[in-house]
Image 1 (cartoon, one colour):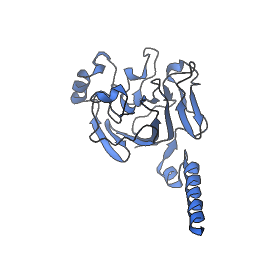
Image 2 (cartoon, helix red, strand yellow):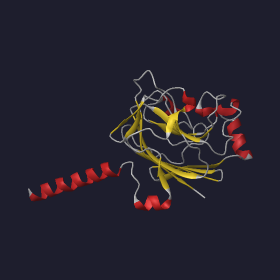
Image 3 (tube, one colour):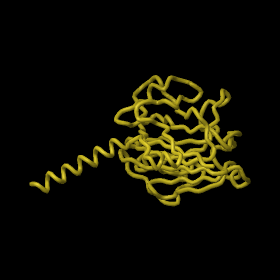
Length: 235
């Protein structure tokens, strides 16, 4: 019995630590230059692309920023207030069953663009088990959407947290998912232009042209949750 209650105490301590550590920076992270993009309680630092709505459908509960797909109002992709060029971005995401979303970068906010994907490439967020996109090559979780597939599938099932990382340095990019580098590529060269020409983005003249921009979390109509969104600017 004593061992049982010792185990219970340990589990409670671990649970308490995990809850406390969400959306927080350690002293080592602060020293290394990391910044929180989500404080766990507000949407400060984010707004709906082109201010198309007040973003009320993006809600917060238990330290999670999530899209309430049942809401009719306050919808839309949300983007960071600031723009970024060279950085390391980490976050955790989970989706509901058969859900779709995405993390976009180098997004240009301008009235001439009515969607974030017209300028910003995407790291796909998806339930690979049953969403229709999972049947399409280069449309699965962790892929550089419609351009480069993951080298290895590491995504976790719907309802479980995935740890994603995007590293951007002088037009070279790496995608990491659950501790594994899954995609690596270079933008703004002849090979990039050729790849775009052979994708669904070929009719979008400004896609993938910007060298810096906003980071976006996609409203694809399904419930998706994010937490521990952190960024470190690289020199």
